[in-house]
Image (cartoon, rainbow, N blue to C red; front, top):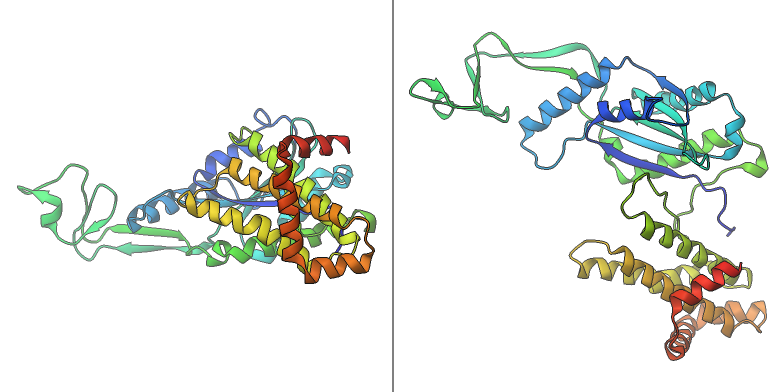
Length: 357
C-alpha cells in the first residue's frame, strides 16, 4: 500500500439542458481561461438530440427530468499545461470517441485561480442513424397534451372537437420520427465511471514521465477520496471542511500503516469508525446525507485513530501488527474510552494539529 498522491479525478454527470451547457463551456465571454474547444459533430446534432430525447421522455410518461446527454469533467495534471492545448484536447476526445463510439464536444479550461486544469467532455448516449426512421399513421391518431398517444377518438374529443391541448395526426402522415438509436445502457452502469477513470488515467500516463504518473484511487482502501468543489456550490464550505478532515484521516492511516498496521485491519477501522456510522446516519435521515453529521463522524474517527497510534507509539513494528490485527476491537475500544474521557473539543484539536503541519 502506497500513500495517495497524483490521483485521477473524474466527475460523471447528467445533463438536462445539453445545448445550454455546450454554450456555457465553449463561450469565451463566460470562460475566463478557455484554451481550446473540439467538436466531433456540428452543433445541430446536439439540438436534434435534445429534441428527440425530450420527445421520447414525454411519450414515456416518466417523472423527473429528461437526461439529454452526459458530461465528464477530467482534471489534468499540471505537467499538461505545457502541452499544445488543441492537440491535447483532440487526443483525449478522439481517444474517447474511438473507445466508446460516441459523438462529443469538449472544452479545455483553467479555473479562475489557474489551480485546476481540466476538460469538460460532453457526449451522447445515442448514435445517429444513417437514415431517419419514420412511423406513418395507418389511421387518424390522437395525442394528449403531453404528446402521449390515446387509443380512441372519444378520449381526445368532445362534441366532435379536440379537447384543449390534444392533437390529431391524419392517416398517412408521419406521427413519429427518430434520428437516433436507443440510449446505450453502458453509460448508466455504476462500473462505467470506474472504467473510464482507468481509461483516462492510462491516456495521461502515456504522455507523462514516470515520476508524474497518475493513479486511480484504489478500491477497498482504508483511505478516503476528497471531492472537487464546483463553482457556486452551496455546500462548498462543508465540502472544503470534509476534504480537510479526509486529508487528516489519510495521514493518520498512512502513519499507522508505516508502523506495521496491516492493510486489512485499517480497512476494518475505516468500516467501523466511518462507513457504518455514515450509513446509519443516512438511514435515520430518511435516505438523505447530512454533511455536518458526516464531518462530526470524521472528527471522532480521526481522534480515535490518533489515540490508537499514541497507545502503540512506543512499540515495535511486530507489536503494532499483532495489536492491530489480533486485538483490533479492544484497541479501538480503549482509544474511544480515552477520547470520551478527555472531554475536549475534538474538532478544534484536529484543526490545530492540521495547521501545525
